[in-house]
Length: 334
Image (cartoon, rainbow, N blue to C red; front, side, top):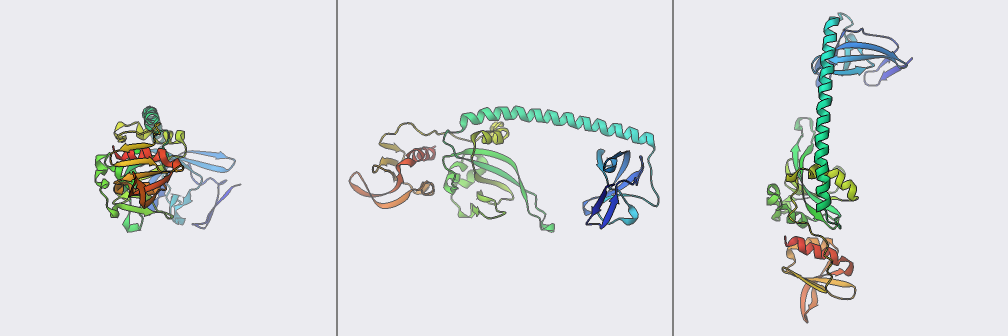
């Protein structure tokens, strides 16, 4: 004998006792006490007691339950049978209804299979595309996410979902950096306005329940930009394959790999990268626009460095940071 105890309703159900018959109408109550109707099309007995197989008369879907309570003892959400005036549907009608629901279920399964096949075809394209565009030294991806508000202020429920994701570029370090996000914002028309510095768009929600670092007006609606770390290249490709399978979701202007040329001095635009000492390199030039990125790479700003025999300001880095600095400078010139 199996007994099911409802702590909410304070009831005990003995599943060895059959409470309804086939073709009997059941009344269901859902969230908000919305009422719906079902019919029992099969009753079976297992080692755990009776199981009732039902058809939802509104949605034309199958369901099952072990607990059906008398309507006279209704206590909340659940399924009930009218123990005063039980209602039945003609057995022939129930058979026809069962066939209709089975046909609907088969059609849905076939539709789901077609959709799964379509998704796999798109993912196959995405996998190959990602293999081509991910730099070998990428540690993170910068993405734009379109957010849709799903909040219900009347019930004090606040939530949002991502309806579309666009890949804007890749980063050689996992640290969050708003300047880096702004640099890539212009790759996508919907986020181009975020490339202009505006501290109101810089969100730092590094707390339980927060959304982390992101650039945008609101995490509940519109577009935001954020960084996602790449822990495992293969896992990343699989997770983002469907996104990358749609060409419109790739807005990477140019992929920069770490240059193999390690000459002592490299001039790229307004920046100069030099070997400053045996263990350090320095960046000179108009670095104001990328100061946050330089700081994120561990650089130290110094007003009193020497370049070509003259005192000038610049950033000093360990020699090991040279490959990342070269890529940073190249990315900012795109």
